[in-house]
Image 1 (cartoon, helix red, strand yellow):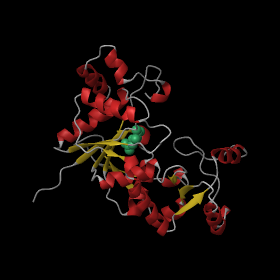
Image 2 (tube, helix red, strand yellow):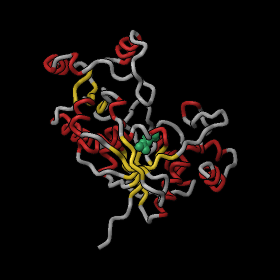
Image 3 (cartoon, rainbow, N blue to C red):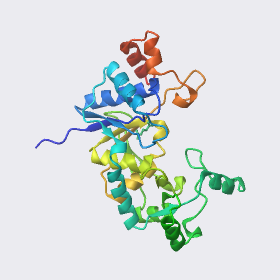
Length: 290
Ligand code: GLU
């Protein structure tokens, strides 16, 4: 009997050009997949219509090809699979775990500004300050019917009570000892599972897709490590398999800031236009982890 080959994925968002940090993550996925004879998938995480653009997706695929990385086709594009996320939302809803939330960012900011000690989530954003009990289900239903825009949020207390204590499995790299880390989804409060403009959120789409694509190994940056608490919870609630996680260290710029589009980190494309070769980028991107 042969066991299925491990499956890895690299999952960028096409909201800008790839930088050295993405190259690091993609190359690490490729190296780990190679080490265990695994498959490597590319997933385009383009649920945000305001920020994602097809020309960035084209650039991502070109840059990865230039780096010498080959991915299986077809590439999964999240924007083409909203039906899968809607189905998962339906299951969470049937368990009584989601509710419609009509508040705007400004409402949240105002509520929190009045409470200086209000707790923050692991990303530094205030926990959602309007408990589910603050509005009746009848009022929520009538606002929905009247066409008020709403997000769907996970009732975190109820979800955690249902799922019980959770851990996830983490390895530093292939062959290193597997450890179990305690998940703490309560630290995130009532996360959004469907945004006002699209019927999913990052958290929901990532767990649904990892399961649908049969991903066995999730290798991604340490900035997403805390989010794994929410992902593990959603996997348990939805009855999805549990991948093995690796959260790799992030590349920093000379000022110690993590590379990112938002601080204008030099793109692979700019490095290439300035004469860098794929070999140089591969060495720079992989050297950092030693
Ligand atoms: N799309 C996410 C990003 O570009 C990565 C998601 C993941 O690897 O789970 O940061």
